[in-house]
Image (cartoon, rainbow, N blue to C red; front, side, top):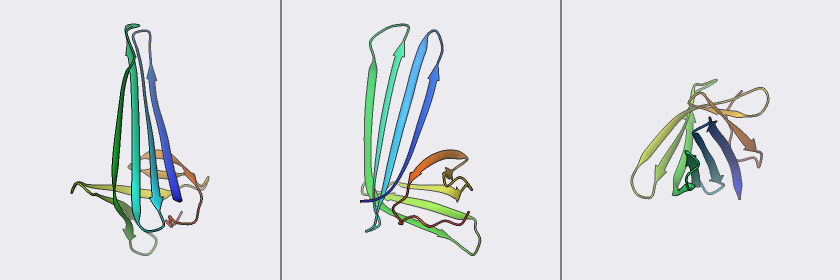
Length: 111
């Protein structure tokens, strides 16, 4: 397995209900799996659902006490880079958004 970072974004008002669930698994062999599930209902219409899956290689880089960056290189050749830091509560902040963390000892970023 590996470390799992997850995040849920949700917006709701009288006309729209939108939700996105991200789950990013960082495996011990430096491979990653990123699953995204988005659903929305607009004006009490039918639910629209979309899923996306990316896989590839991950790395964390930085010097000394930071800053640190999580870099994801997909098998399709795309590259994503996130500023990353650990909070005192043990969560991680990727590009200013809080992600929960399931500790398995793979991801190491200074607080």
